[in-house]
Length: 164
Image (cartoon, rainbow, N blue to C red; front, side):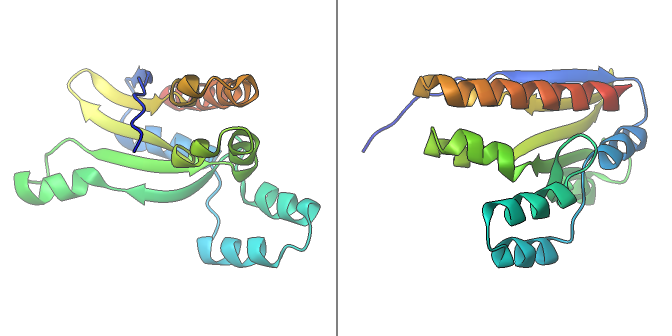
């Protein structure tokens, strides 16, 4: 059995925009494919170029697609009432970027797609992301780390734009 410590760095930006506007900005930048159809098309792709075309068609303007959405705030509000601050977790990514990391460090598949957390606090709407480069740093692979840094830059730009 092996245990590897991983120190994770978090990028966070605080927006003065309302929660719904931040979510709308993220929604506009990220693709929202029908995941059943996407899975079918990925499975039916007969070559790498066909697979790339399926993925590219699913991506939004920021180069990502949404895989899942968890409304954590909804669950908390069930106990504490409708004025509870909202919390939303988006699982987004790009399978082409994940592939470029995982072919060098298979464990990258544990961290991609990535999580974007949007939550309301007294000082504004926090939009946070755990840096992929920090997840992959302990593996010491320069190629995977370079891809991770590129991914981090893209996600940071997305969050900064959504924050307005």
